Image (tube, rainbow, N blue to C red; front, top):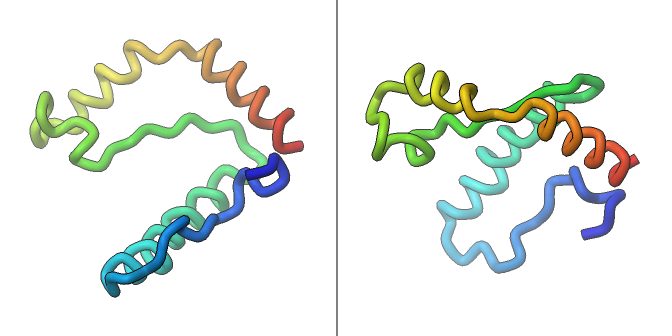
Length: 91
C-alpha cells in the first residue's frame, strides 16, 4: 500500500466465498469506514475501540469503566506525534 492510498477502502486480499463475508465487509464495514473518514476530515481526533471484544473479559458490560481506565493510560503527546507523522506520510 503506497502512502497516497493509505486511507482508501481496500478490497480484501482473498475471495468473498462466503456471502455473509461479502455483505459484512462491502456494506457494513465500508459504511463504518466511510463514516469514520467523514468524521475526521480536517480535524484532529483520537479514536478508541469500543466493540465488546476489546474490553468484555475484564469489564463485561461496564463500558464507562473501560473508557475511564483507557484514558488514564493514554499519552497524548505520543498520540499527537503519531498524528503529525501520519499527516506527513499521507500528505
